[in-house]
Image (tube, rainbow, N blue to C red; front, side, top):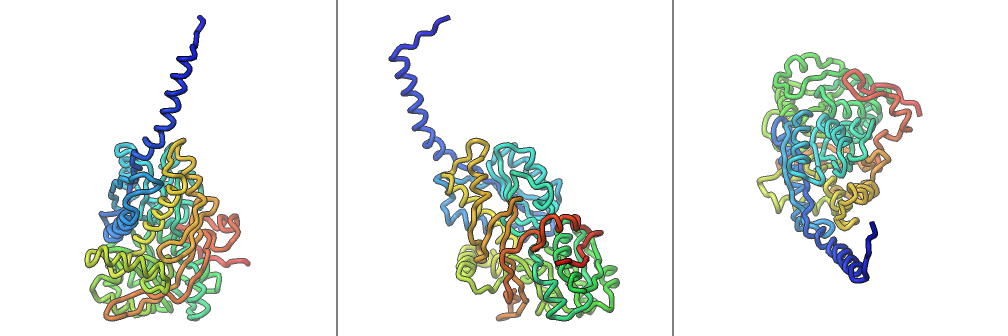
Length: 423
């Protein structure tokens, strides 16, 4: 069969192709980007989850819900800090709501579940919210999962060394949640503290525990300080019961203990919090213009509905959303070709987060960033975390060669990181 193409036919075809090419950017610009937000609005971290959405909302409003020249539709979904529930809600966002990008989740085991789910996706991207389990990106990372917030072990950088060498405390007791995020925090602290010659005792309890009397009774009399790695309602329940039992050890806090979700609560625990040391990605009082501006905008936008200053979860969600919007701006909102250009831009983006901390990614798409050591002080009748030391550019391997760090094994209740460090 012979096909005859006339000059008129060819010109029609060329005109149609040119028109469709010229029209494509207009279609792209008029098609909103569907952004899914997944956080915990149920369970022990509900107040932190609410603040996560507050901080995301602030950034989106500031940008007029636009990035890369395209409007953003924000679809919210809630979990309860359980991995199976987070996975189900993420699937709903992708498969029913047809979102392009998810920012979330909040808690450690949830992050690992979404990391695994992201491997099954094509043309979609999951960017962490606030989950801090080390293994989410340290082992078997997914090319579709990015984390611009530091992990739980990174958040403890500097604290173990300070307790051992500056405070000269030779034994620390740990009370911690029995799940992925506290494992990372305890691991990061133990690696430094035990490496400096310290002795540790570990007391674990499941997420959602309400009676801590047995745990409190087992705290060694020989301990010189107590490290508490709980958060949300679990942290409040433990600290209330510890105060009522007459506990008086110097306190060290996991990063989500020294947070406005804990310090804004009323009760007998407050007297114990004054003077508590912690480390992590944020503090209430931090002498940096970017942070002061962010706090001022937060207070103006949310007033009494929010906290005195943004929570750790809110700031982590904001940090991750910052990266998403910067990458979208860099590629002009282009999510075509299975989001290849967007993900390439996301992997290379560098910026300063609300704390003024420098943020960039390593080869596993995990944040390298600054960590702050804090002390809780009472100011004008309010408990506030105040920075007194900054550890810059903390890597996920805490300065160790990657293979040496990986050889230590995954953080767990049976592997809390209490080993001597060589070098």
